[in-house]
Image 1 (cartoon, helix red, strand yellow):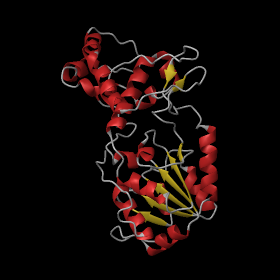
Image 2 (spheres, helix red, strand yellow):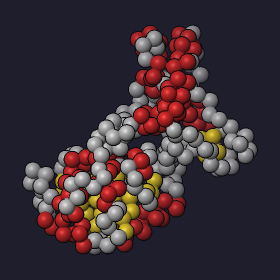
Image 3 (cartoon, helix red, strand yellow):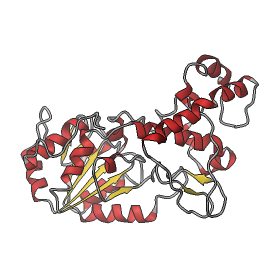
Image 4 (cartoon, one colour):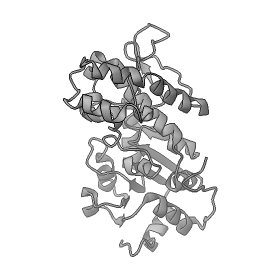
Length: 312
C-alpha cells in the first residue's frame, strides 16, 4: 500500500472494515501531540540538571526518593493539564466499530482512557497508579481537577527553599552537574512551575515509601501486560503502530510478531522508522490528522463523538 498526500489507501480501508481483531500500538508521539513532553524532553527546569536514565532507576529512588518522586509528580501534573487529541478520540471510536480492538501503549499517561477508550494495556506502567516500593500495595491518587493546582502549588511553595539550598552549595545527590548555581540564579525566581523535590507518601499498609507506578530502567515489563499485548499482536488481523520509534524493546517486537503471524501492519508516524521497510502501509504525518481520516474513510464517521485537540 502506498500513501499519497495523506490519502487513505483503499486496501487499508478494506482491511480495517473486514478485521475482526485489531491492535493499536501507540508511543510517545501520540501524547506529544497533546503537548506532553517525551521522556527526555521532560528534563526541563530543575530536572535539566539530571540525566533521564539516572532518575528512572530503582537505585535513584532508593538513594534520592524526594528527587525522583518530585520529578514524576511534576510529570503527572503536566499530564493532568493536557487533554486527549483527535487521535485519542479516533482510536476510542474505532473500538465501537471493530469486534475486538486492543490498545497497547508505551505511554504512562491516561489520555486514551480520558478519550473514552477501554481495554488499554500499559506496557510501561502509569503515572496514575503508584504503588508501595516494598509490599506492592496500590496507592490511591486523586487525579481530579484540584490535583493539578495542588501539585503545582506544592512545587511553588518550596521553590525558594530549593534555590537557597542550591546557593548554599548543597549537592546531596550524585546526579547534579556543576551548573546548579547558574540554574538557580537564572530560573528560581521566575519559574516556580519547574519542579522541586517532594518526599513520597508512606504506604498505608506497611509504611514504606510509595514509588511511581512506571517501569524503570533495569525492570521487566509487567508480566500480565506483556502477555496480553503479545497475545493480541499474534492473533490480530491488523495492527496500527502509531507515534512510536520502533526502537524500544521488547515493545518494538509487537509489530514484528504481528507481521510474522500474517497480520497487516500499518504505521502512522511523521518520521521514518525501522518499521517503514516492513509495514504494509506507511502514513507519514501527525496521528491527530491521520487517525480521524482513517475512521472517516473506513466507517463514514466524520463526527463520531470526536473532539478537537483542546477538548476539556
